[in-house]
Length: 256
Image (cartoon, rainbow, N blue to C red; front, side):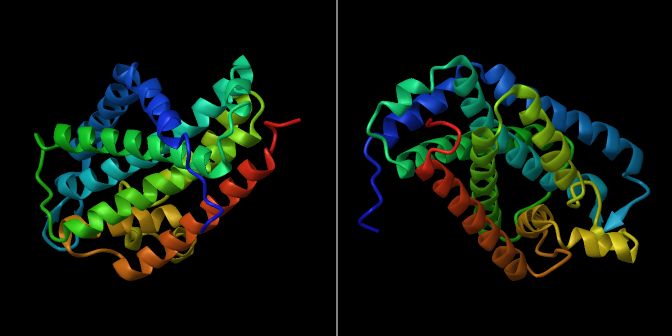
């Protein structure tokens, strides 16, 4: 661990947090509004037609999924948008001339992504309390999966930001990878309501385990064991974070 150097990470982290917080109406407020609209539409249509986990109402079931979906999408958006904007505008060079290590870059970008993801998730949760209160059966699982999910998507955003060279590449990454994996993860439904083929496909999606484990923290029940979800999400985070660190160490597409 002696090779881990974090000098300057705090300053870069502060800069990244300030970057999204200065436009919080767009970066925090807008995602909260989007989640509330999802709740209004799906909750109104399906509340009296869908029951999950026995006695859990559909609106209560939906809230943790929307919270986690917002955490994941905004954690990814924070690190990916920051890097691609810096690359295209040319101001990334000011970071490259500093003695920041790849560990410092990773800690700052992913740390800021976690802050934004959790801020949006908290905003969504508070806003949706007017419609239903889901309960807190096991708060520890809520915190663990919230942090791991935000950290993993922040790391994935770093990878996407390093890989992409223009905005349409970033949009393609988000539209063809992040969005499908998010919406096919059980945000709006229990995967046990799916046909066998799609149930099997869902179990190959790490986003499913993030949302299912997160939801377990509210209701104490879930589609799979929270320990299995923790193992899958933990392994996925280590894999994605390791790849992001290696790309930063090599200066992939940022050093020529």
